[in-house]
Image 1: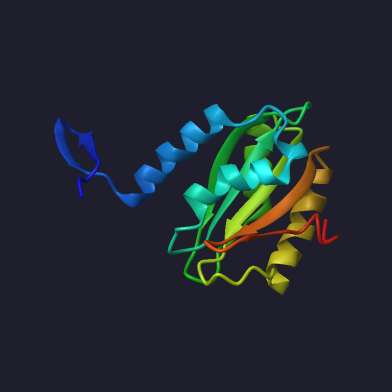
Image 2: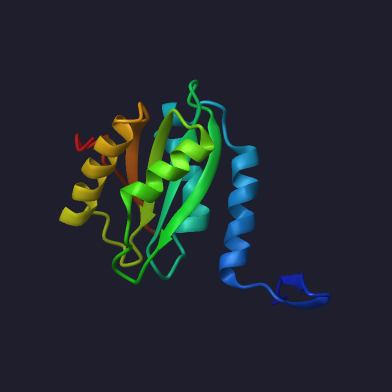
Length: 158
């Protein structure tokens, strides 16, 4: 197996997994469908390749414009194997920087358990309230694993 290499300070070294995932996200944004929010299947097709194999929880936000076209995907937080801290203030700050009108949250469960924890549900409500004050809609919050996904919107939690 060949390692992907990156150039740092004039020297090449093997790329770290996070560096590879970052580049994958950039390419995914370029190839995303225009009306991403209208298709949960499109969100999952876009997110699963760079989220499902992660060994630690990570929290991403897909930022959308007024037509629900994808502006960007940001990894905002990383955690441990079973938790990731999420701070509504930082999410709101990035939403304003991106000039977003809507957001879709995605985080992974390395354990494979797709059920949202009470903490997942609580932070989703807090972020929906926080972003709502800024007229930014939260359209969904997906939990992704190697075996499937869970949509909070489809289960009436948003």
